[in-house]
Image (cartoon, rainbow, N blue to C red; front, side, top):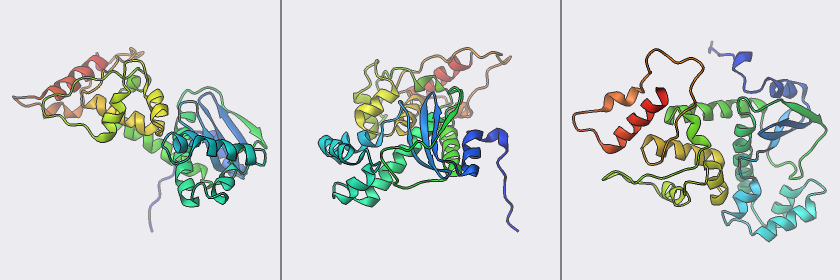
Length: 265
C-alpha cells in the first residue's frame, strides 16, 4: 500500500482557506497583501499589489494592446465575463489565456498568503469581474505557495533582499549573465525594488524575486543587512557552500561569503 503524508494544521499556509474550501464557499478572502476569490471552494482568481495582474502580463508583454484589454473590461466587466470576451472576440486563445491567468493567480496568491500579512477576512458572495477561466483547488494553491517559499530559501535564505532597492554590482571576470538577468539589471537603479522591476517588465513578481535572489547569491547585486534576530546564536551558522572555497577563491564566492557572514553576525 502506498504511504501518504498528511499535512498538519500547523504547516498549512492558510487554515481559513482550507476551511472555506471544505465549506465550498464563494466569495473573497481578504488579507493585507492581497485577495483570493473563491467559487464553491475553488480559487478562481487572486490579486496582490505586489504582483502584476493579468492585464499587465498581457499588455506590457505585448501580447494584447492596452485598448484591447480596456474594451474587454468596458464591454464585459459588469457581467463578470472579461475572460470569455477576450477569447470569443479572438483577441487571445483560450489556452493562452488559461496559462497567463494561472501564472497571475499563483503569483498573487504567493504574496497574499505571506506570513504575517495581517488579519484574514472573508466576504461571502463576492465575485471578480474577470469571470471563470480555470479554477484551481485550495490544496494546489497551498502546495505551490509552500514550494515557492522553499525554493527562495534554497537559492538565498536572506529575505531582506526581497523588498530592498536593487543595486547591481559589476560581474567578476568570466562571470556571465542570462538574457533575463540582463533585462532585470537594466532596470536596477538603486531605487526600484524587485516588485517595481516586475511591474516595469510585465513579468510575474515571484519569478523576478527568485532571479534577484540568484543574483544576490552570485554577488551581482547589493545585499542589505538582515534585521537582528530576537535571540542570536552563540556562533553563526555558515552556509553549506562555504566548503567550496579553495586556495584560489573567485570574487563572486567571496562576495557570497561576506554577505552571508554579515547576515549571520
